[in-house]
Image 1 (spheres, rainbow, N blue to C red):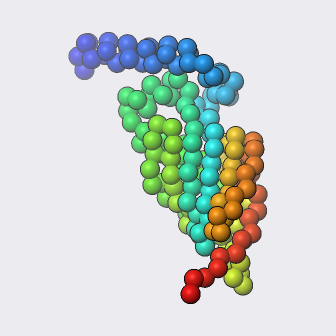
Image 2: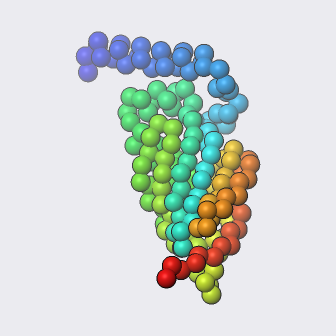
Image 3: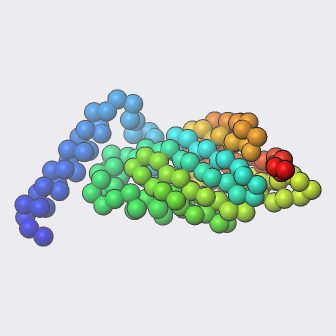
Length: 157
């Protein structure tokens, strides 16, 4: 790699870190214990035995610079780690501050009702929202373990 390219990359990283330090509302406490991702919101929308998940997060300044240079694909292992308690997770899209994924067979069907057991998340989320098939929502704050969920899906005729 040429020296100009190395200097340019170093300057970009330095500028990103400096800019992130000056942004109001970004606290170092959010990234303690070596964690580089802070989960703001998780929305789990149930549909029969599967669920669609949207996650909003923000990254530490260093992680922002890293993702800026190397791409958000490098966040995939961390997103998988967050949902490692679920068995069949398929990541659909990862961006700099959000991701969407599909969790297959998250619920079990019994007599027309569905049950989703509680599951530990790989990080604590500021807000976790369940969206039921009928459109109802229920939110929890500061969650590291999901609540058990019980719902009914009316079959369309």
